Each structure stands twice: as C-alpha cells, then as structure tokens.
Length: 133
Image 1 (spheres, rainbow, N blue to C red):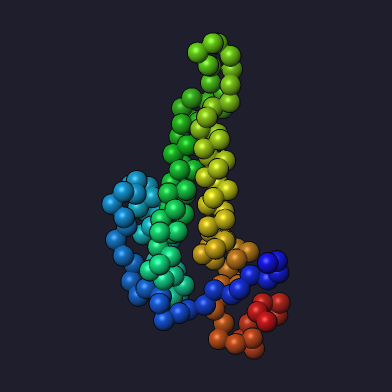
Image 2: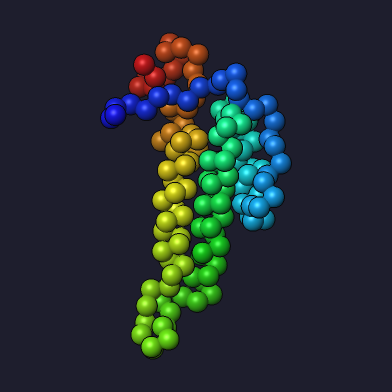
C-alpha cells in the first residue's frame, strides 16, 4: 500500500532502558548499539520486539566501517588469480550495508528525513506545519 508512512509513537511496549548489546555483535556494532539505542529508548520509540531489527542496523553500520578498512588496505581494485583487475569485493559489501543501514535508520527515525514523522507529537496541533495529520 502506498502513501504516508504511519507515525512512530511511544507505546506501552517501549523499553525503559538500554539492554546490553547481543554478545554476537562485533565490538564496533556494540558501540553503535550503546550510542544509538539510548536516544530511542529515552524517547520511548523502540519496543523489545524491535531489538532484532535494531541489531541488524548496528551490524550494517559496523559493516560499512569494516569494509572501508578493507578498501583502504587493498584499494578499490584487486588483482584476480588470473591477473585481471577486478572491483574489490569489499565495495559490494559496503554498498549493500549502506543501503540496509539507510532503510533501517529511516524505520527507527534516525535519518533527518524520518525524524519529523517519528517525533511522537501528542496531537496534530503540537506538530509544526507540514508534520502529522
């Protein structure tokens, strides 16, 4: 169904404190978990059943930096076993991680464009012009 996305609002199911990051996250993804989950919890914008999706956001965010480190180390092009220059596979990993991160960031109201829809105004009168309703 096309049209406006439903506003994300505080719910009774919202978690009240940042849980520890899942043990299987990389150290970088754990840092993302701790720093980027805190504002969502404080604003009551995330429920426990959404944490697995947020875990994917953290992994994708970390994967962007991890793949960039490989690109920095090996370059944009690598030499194949046959001697041909080929695109570094890390560039594909990074491209996919950026796309996933952007989609998930929008779902959680982390992107500038999604913040307005996720403000959780109590009613349309509280919303600035063009937001809500």
